[in-house]
Image (cartoon, rainbow, N blue to C red; front, side, top):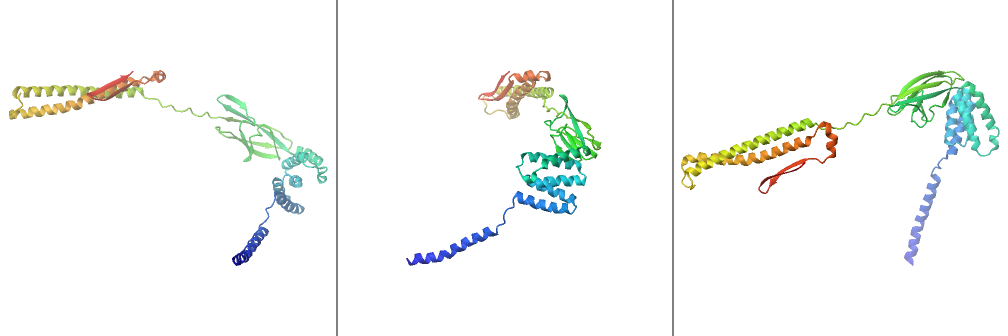
Length: 340
């Protein structure tokens, strides 16, 4: 009982300290900012700059606020009004049209009353001040030439800025001025063209891309003539070895005959027969070497010749089983087998 009481008294302060520490950590942990609060902060900074007649600095903040929190339509309207004030009529018109589309799906709110009409009137008012051009890209390939569409994969750049692959053949609204248009596609050399547009213009910019065919894979072909030549050389060497083995065999037999005539008993033979005996032994050794070399050489050479085929019948040869010749040592000497 005493120990239980002491343990309780000892660990109760520790537990209280642990709980207190968790409470302090929870209270000190910073609350994560929500997209809505970030957007409100950006909007407030942009509004202050606009009230100070600095739309150039306010517009990027309004744009960022709308991107962070698309439900904040006030940022989008302020962006449209700032862009129009700056003379960026194409950007202003796009912002007003974005606002008009967003209001269609936005929840009903009294503060947005009449905004759809304002957006429609502003877009119509700015249209005559905006220029547009259409980029028509023709893609030429080995199959022919066709007009590119959004599924072709052609990417369009305007003054170095990509407008994606889905706007090929559609009007691109821009402020009046000069633009450098670039079209590119995989396996094709990019092309560029400069277009100068004024307010109300809507020209077509025609560009052509030529797809470079991929090189055909190189198929390794066998040099049949070289193979055949090597085969005849190897067979010739083998034949020469066979002839040599025949010569050494005859010389061996001659030496053996001399020994039989002068020393048939193989005992107490004359001393001058030693050179004859040595010659016979040497010829016997050479015969045992030259004979298998000759057989292998002739067999391998004929195999190369027979399997070389011809360059004009390579496809036919590929359909037939390969002809092989195998030369290998047998139990009693050499064995030669083949299938043709």
